[in-house]
Length: 128
Image (cartoon, rainbow, N blue to C red; front, side):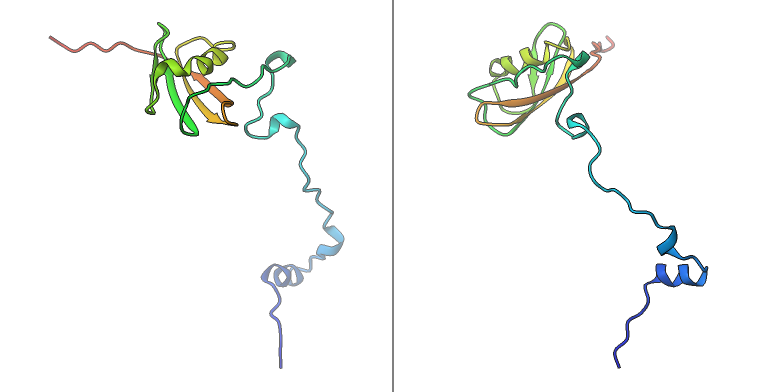
């Protein structure tokens, strides 16, 4: 004799005298967002056009992290020369001024997606 157990949710609904077939309405599970609702697709500020992603030839790796200081100096987390990050910093500085922390992800051979957020920089002095 083969039998199947009734799923718990159906058993509880039956015991509570809930008829799920009549009360359940279809659920539309399709995506209901525009391109800006998808992670990694930024919207253009003010509804304008987006600038093309920056090209930065000569960089190795697929991710970069760097900080731009108020004076324009770049501090790079990875083993990359700071002068090769110029195109990435230039792209960011069209919308945000230093100081900021930035992350870049390779999108193609020389094409990068870049995001940044403002930071505060403090100068700490030791006691003498």
